Length: 389
Image 1 (spheres, rainbow, N blue to C red):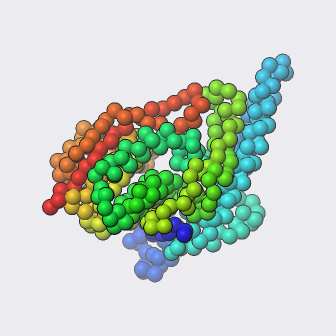
Image 2: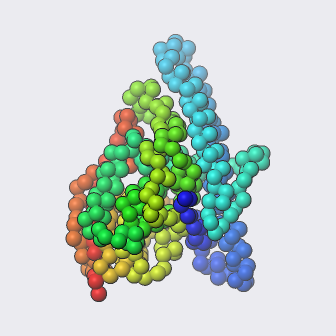
């Protein structure tokens, strides 16, 4: 049974439409038409970014080929494996493009309440210019598949999702789980949502990034066999490579059968801005945030929203760092609180009771296990309970 995915008209940040601009619209109908146009433009921008994956990747690879050709001949003869690696890289990029095409092909009709008409778009001629940051998001999405859906990402999932899953089983009701409503904002490619639904909870994932939503829709709704897809997630990482074949190492996914959930499993996804999509108070039994709260412009707004939508006595379970994605980004606002200050907001500002807490657990994020470079996040894990009254 397909996993329902709703498109929420809450894309203002992605499409650059501010409240002030909205107010300038002459009528409600004009505003609706304008929002739909901007939403379609943003949707198609992401489609084109995926479709341009091969051309953008080959262009970068060609520069490396030229760089190699510009060094002395006897230097090139000393590193024949490097030249071979560049040739192999092109073949791997071609294979990745097949995966990208599959992902895009299944975006048509992916939202049950919105259709942007993507069918056949890859055959409509040349693509528009793709911004480097948009192509980077495609590469990141492909790498994220390892973290959520490959055996190579099992250690990351255990360190990131493991404490949250253990806390759910400890604090959430063990009986009547289909009626226990759990929300996962910042769901990414959906593995934590999948594992939560597998435990029997009524779980909804929320994701803002269409890049992630495209891939999660493909994995959750289209793949029916375990480890049926092979691709090359590390092909863009030329630095900190220990062995040449690590660069072109294939990865299979998914490591589970995504549609093999129990018959009574209740799983859904909703697209849009977390702060705008969820407006019903006292609705959710639990909110799970994993590597999410630092994506806020104003982290206090996230705390307030979680407080509002949780039922009295409900649990907020968090695990992740405080990277603050908008810190030092030109033109973007960011409130970068220390955990000490954030904890006061949680406990004193909103009267959450922290009933479990760890501040020294470490975790990677989309880490190549064979890379010479590794970044460890010192994660903050806590279970906070909303007051019962």
